[in-house]
Image (spheres, rainbow, N blue to C red):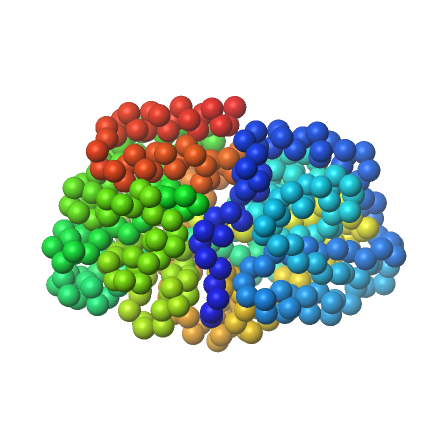
Length: 443
């Protein structure tokens, strides 16, 4: 697969209100979205109006062309609306959705930012997917989804969306550089530190990352490591709980990596482009990235490989992932129509992987089994080995919420990351500041 969108763009997609630059988050759209409650859709079938499906550019232009074809080939049952397809560019996409929903000109079904459904559900604009998922459980289609993916979209009020694709943070290594340094591929944090020390003697970094403008990879690597060591940002009840023994151990371990020369001192200012340049110029031997590193670098050498999940200090394994999704809206010409279309679309979007136009990780086992997907051995390894141990931002708990959009890649995490990557800090003080900063966000 080629033309995978850069990670810096993927970061902006994951949130929704955060991507607009609106500091107040969900509250800032409350006045706009309140209007939606007065003039929502019919919620039942029989409308002559078409059902609008809005989608983002999740790959090259050929992705949207293929997705449009699938949409337009939909043949609804009698009494249900047909579907139309519209591409919503990532530039200002959040404003596009908010203004369209406020004027009742928005979609009935859409893709979008990873936390968009949670945020609009809080404002009453999302049609919950409980009935749809129940029908899939009855038909057996629900069994085609990877474990935990459907459940990740459940809130106290119901399922805000259904899974469509995955994004995950995994450990990559460049085989030639490890061979040059005479070290084996690490399987644990201790082995990672040892390998980093050997790489440093060759002028190679063992923890390739960055936390400059627009680059959320560094912050996400921090969270992935907290999860890896059995910690996280929230406790099992969803309360902010950053200053824990496991998190302190993790931050102190990162300090050890820095002292071992594993972290480029300039990493605190690296943009995504800077980080990719470091990978391309073979200055990074090991690093944390998304599942599409070779595609992002246009590297077909076979030298970039995914490690198996690393075992942390107490034997834990884990990493951070996002379940991107498709959502339904209350303003629809037909709620049964929305559900029927969404079922059709997910049962036919395997074509996007067959045609090689969708660079994302699939959520359906039947898509993963396709020969076209199986050819990408590194992504298959990510699905087989990393997805079963991956966790969302909720980490020790299970329920996500709209506030996560303000945390994911936000200033609090970025400042914490830059402090830690510097290697010169007090772990307890850094975590206490992160606790204070995130607590202020979620109030």
